[in-house]
Image 1 (tube, rainbow, N blue to C red):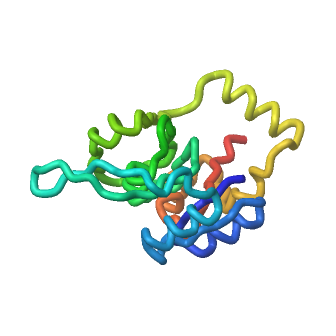
Image 2 (tube, rainbow, N blue to C red):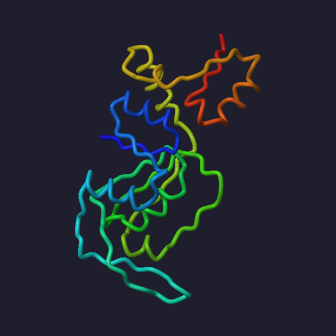
Length: 176
């Protein structure tokens, strides 16, 4: 089951319509962690987390979420931070969202959890073929997330619309 978190209520409605579980991140990190603990469970409540404070290593009690893979589709900085704080051993974090700024990564947490962080820059030819096949077979809910379609000559307006997450989810340029 996918859990998607956004700040925008319109996006949450789409997530729920598609069968996902929406989480509004306006409630803050504590509410998000509590939700994830309740939904996925805690692997080991007695685990400890290495931290840094004033240049000194610290050891703090910590809950470890029973989550193997996190796929960041929203680009919200707190996801990376909370993943690092609550990652179980060898968990994986894959970012496919665009983050608008730099994010600090605490390598001592990567080392102590042996977790992996990976990115995605685009699609391979096999991925594109699979998408085309699924679209042809109508094996997808993609039409439900397309909020805007523009003819190619209105590409500038399409890109401008795509930068407004409160009003646009997926913007399509019609090449025909």
